[in-house]
Amino acid sequence: MFDPKVFILLTPVLLLALTVHEFSHGLVAYLLGDPTPKLAKRLSLNPIKHLDFFGTLTLFLTQAIGWAKPVPINPNYFKNPWRDMALVSIAGPLSNILLAFIFGFLFHLFYGLNLNYSSFVISQPLALMCFLGIKINLGLAIFNLLPIPPLDGSKVIVKFLPKTWRFNYLRLEMFGFIFILILAITGVLSKFIYPILNWFTNLILGITSIGSI
Image (tube, rainbow, N blue to C red; front, side):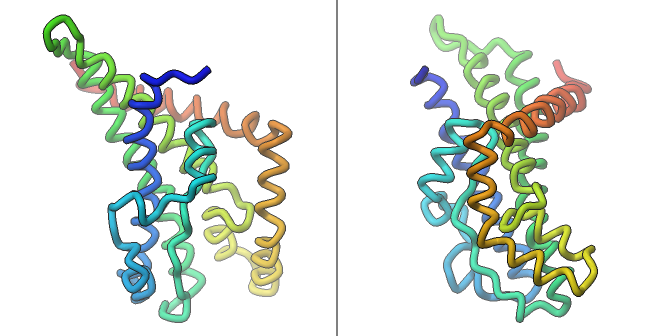
């Protein structure tokens, strides 16, 4: 059931999660010598430059599964292409995990406060928005770390595969998206992701509760 209040609170954290994820890919690639993200104007925190309509809609509906427009990367600029591509790929999910921790600390801050404006308790919706921020960012990180081409996890794990396997593994990318859709439609993907998402959500809430009000 559509809840306009949840939509209002969910939208900013969703846009932030997707934007920081793609920006992090581009930034690490640029720092490793690839000018392609900068030339494509993707070294930006402007959400419009990164959003994919269906990926954003999917993330909004599931609060766990989603994607943005991939940042163009040219591995030919890297000194060590396999290693550097793995670093670029892991940067996106790691940025979401960091954001999840930040939202965790903010959640406990707002949850422990009693900020009022007139008779409206401001701290309650802010705490809920931070909780949604934890879930969105963790869900995005977990989903993208799956070792299914073209997700980020596949570009990390390929670094550790025998060299003779690497190109054949990455060729699965043409079928990977279809495979992901099948897993999503059948519910297999959510059954796998949601228990992990809930476990890590509770873990971050527990860690960030240290020293809270």
